[in-house]
Length: 347
Image (cartoon, rainbow, N blue to C red; front, side, top):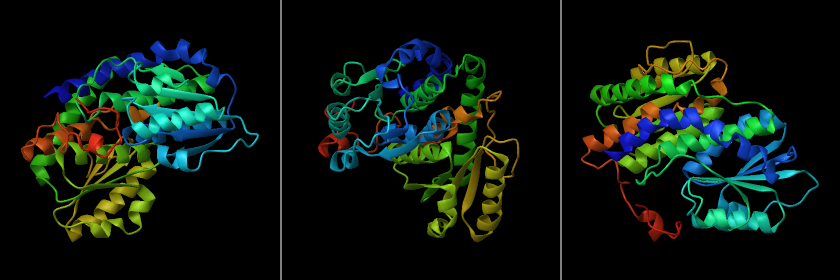
């Protein structure tokens, strides 16, 4: 299972990435001035990663942060309004058709534009924007894991560069392997406890809205199990009514308050039949917690969206295996190219 290798590679990649890209970011023209408006541009996993870093960008700059899918960007491009505007785009593969077109439009319209990508030879890297190539090596399976977490950390690195803040993650190299292996064991236990659900609802807020969106995407595209992802507050306003006794609700909690909200949801919902698990990164323990050993982040909880998906990356693989699906292949491998949203087929 190649994807398992890529999940494990996140230890060294996340530990080394900020130091490897710091000098490159410091010299980028797109980041030369503090923006007053930041437009996030991406789709799929790339947009999820941008959303995971959105609050960090807002905190670092005080800028208004807006998110646009490429089609929406092309349909209604941002106007020059006197605000210093940064277009921050992400495309791990660099081959999403509309993302390439939207970045070109941003450059042509005169906006400082920075692209985060895993492929410096891709089309998106050739349209005139500043380009940050993530030092992550190849990821030759359709469902991206290390590519996602590296994109999240790259967005945090951009926030740190704009905020003139040093970002050091070298300590993760010693701690993340434990998170990865306990995360895998927790995923196996979750499958053993509840089997394959008929539906999985994922919820998270702040940086973990991106985590919820991404892990829901991974579970769906790897295993084929139906999922939906929401902001936690939105999930509480009716979406749990769509669950059954065979469904699973997963809440990602970063703070004590998040964990208490998740626990309250569990106490209210599980007597009715649905099951609940908490991906709990907070100090407040609940009886629904996945047994994962998280990094001791020493004041860097704001970048925890880089490692929060790990147990659910494994869970997607475990669900796929249980359903007789190869985790290295998306459930419909070349659907993207048939829908004309990619410039070439996935590996």
